Length: 369
Length: 154
Image (cartoon, each protein chain N blue to C red):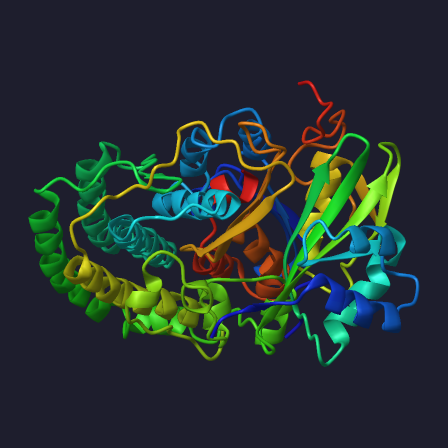
């Protein structure tokens, strides 16, 4: 039998492609179905957030952070507010800390549900599993609506705490959500964790060795899937994370399955954290006396960092004594997690590429800023 | 486990011993922030190599590279972490002037510098020597100016 001669072919995947989860382009060179070369191209969603922040006052910038990783806006709010509080040396009242921790964990569940749902969608299970994930996510967005009137662009947090206390009807709704969600989540886990198709398509595919993950500044679930127990909520506890118990799940192979599995386990841990917050929270103020127009000391700077749903999200703020940040640098986990794209994809097939990209779980709002 | 911040003066001593002439002694002495190690921009590559490979420092993770425009000069800020040693460091270097700015790349040490150095070039206009693919990242080739500079007016 003679082998068929093949020729490399370059294809643009995106910028408008349903599996790129946003406006993102991959220029891929294939030999048949096999990937020879990959170049990620982005910037389509670049809105100049860092520049815009220099023209708004510290409180207004909160609204810009909603639009970074737009499926994870609570956590973005939190990272930015922590940076401003570090800049001012401001404290957050205990109840405010708990509300922030609780909403951030709800947001993490919502973001991970989207991540998981889309991996399954990319594996070819069209519709149903994704809708299962969205069903639960909708409930979380309903809770956010109760808190602040918005579902996606929440702007719920402020330097010094949160904008409003939770209304009385929030707490029974939260309890009901947790009860329902634990059932729904069990169902989802049964459907997915030992699913034959998921196993075959993701186990051992696109492994990321730990040393490479570290060298490429990879963080979050992708780093933990490669085997490092590193979570900024544990390392540098902020808000109420030092008063709640949770585990940091890690993978061992760093393959697509591990990245998928780590997110599922993190949802379990988030439920634990939310339950503890709801138990421990006590009446009190939710925001300290921080003026709406802030003027930090000139020359001071702060690095505010959180464990976001995608990884290490940080705001590096520099003040010149004015009412706006002199510099507002955003350390974007999605952008840096993309560094490993080439390593993950070369040598694998087109069909794996889409799943791998899903398992890295990037958000273009955050990559491009 | 909490992460300890390596202090500037302590780091400066160790770095100066390993890479003589690399510490920006003037700014280190002024010590605006006690946490910062100030180095001379041309030494960035050699200092980075020491920080990453010295067994006592072992700063294997590059958290971020930021650039700040101070009109008369620019500052590059590197945030670094060691997972194994459980400490972190902040390193700064000053670049004078506004035109034809260059700094050594740390791409060959930390692949995580790839997109960040390209972003600094794209938005702040500082080129990194030794980066294999020094082109714009957010904006398109042919775009004029560097939008994060203070004198950029759309």
